[in-house]
Image (cartoon, rainbow, N blue to C red):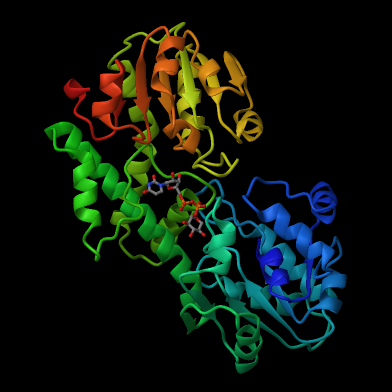
Length: 424
Ligand code: UDX
């Protein structure tokens, strides 16, 4: 997204990609992930000769003065950010460097990574060659990447030299949002602090949903009631089956580790994480409160992607829910408008799993339907058609997409986060 975004703003961009299959795809204008409008943008930029691809770091170093490093920093087994990819890029750059470059960390990296990169670079440089490191963290949301790229709320620019500032000022000249110039360590921290805060809002709302369930308070009015306070805001307070994806879970985990490393209390973040981890299990508990023995039951699961408008299933609640259903010997019928292929790869086992292109067909003869992603198609469900297909009209809704009063009128038993069990 970053490369196509900059290329569409009349910059000359060259991307280096070492995975040959991905390189072949993107070079021919095929984007290997589902991201609305991104493929069109990439094709437009290739056609205008603003965007090109290579597998050689040497080509990029000859071509550009500013290098954005966008590699993954996945979660290592111990919860920390795994920096092997970014380290290896730094070595590759250093070994091929012949003149000044500005290296910009776009990937989410722990505080101090710019120093680590500087040291790695210095160890591998062939001679005395100048370079700068800056940190300009990425805040793109999957499924919303184009909008977020062209209309960011802010751009954070962590720099250490006047030259870095000059180069980045030019690259970001078309962005009219606030620009926050700071040092690289603070820029690195801002990314974790933002994602940690978003995760905290979601876990807080999930905790509120639980107290609504216990007391019978109305969860929708509660969320509306707090969201109307401009100091709180309406976004990221929707309760449900929890946050997933490639960022929030791993960033919260890495942020917890950063606090540990610095001997700073991180109890709040740990609670945010543990509330989130329990959400998928609560789906099964809700299901079992209606169907005590799940063995040999047939259950439909709608929504495999971690959120709508993406085919990404990384850390998606669906993985845990479906695995649990398989353990309980349930026959599972899965539906998702985009994420079926990714889900098949991620799950790695397919006992008792069937995938459907038609959401209503997936519910045929089912004892229950579980909803885990708020895809627009699901929100527009024809409830009569759905009910006619199912053998038992039970919906466990992990995203609260229906109004309880309306769905109960149509004869469904309806369970969702925040609804008191005996009211369901
Ligand atoms: C996130 C950050 O928003 C983005 O700034 C950063 O660059 C990358 O990480 P993304 O992972 O694409 O983006 O998804 P996001 O839209 O943040 O949603 C994350 C998860 O939170 C999803 O599983 C979503 O369903 C869940 N969520 C979101 C809720 O459960 N409730 C909400 O109110 C909002």
